[in-house]
Amino acid sequence: MTAHEVEQMVLRLLAEYSYQQPEPGSTVGSPWSAEKVGGYVELLKQSLVSPRLERFALAETYEQIRASSTECADFWVVAERGEYLEWYDPATNEFGLGQLAADAKRLVSIGVRGDLVGVFCAM
Image: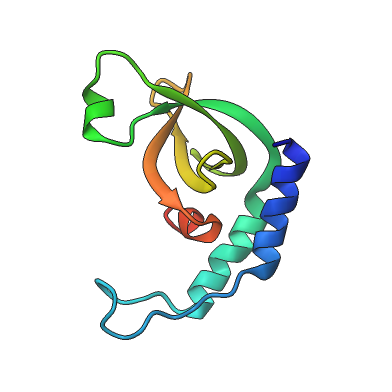
């Protein structure tokens, strides 16, 4: 997959996105309002970057965090906001959340995966 293809897919997903309010009682806690999600969609649009491949250390499970060697994966960065980055993995067709490591020398995937808007809302 090329950077252009990733960019076009992200733009298509945003254009097609429609928030569906969960049924009452089907969630833990109170579902977000359409207005709140709409605000995050606007922030996401402002946070989009030209897609670029980056290497992420995987710190998504307890085992990965405790391992003596670091498992890594290459993902397409599609959005940035503060210390957080949203990435896309074409192998799994998933978006995920990463952040700049405390040493500011590497990127870390922190175990939040899902759809484009949902992952951004987790920031």
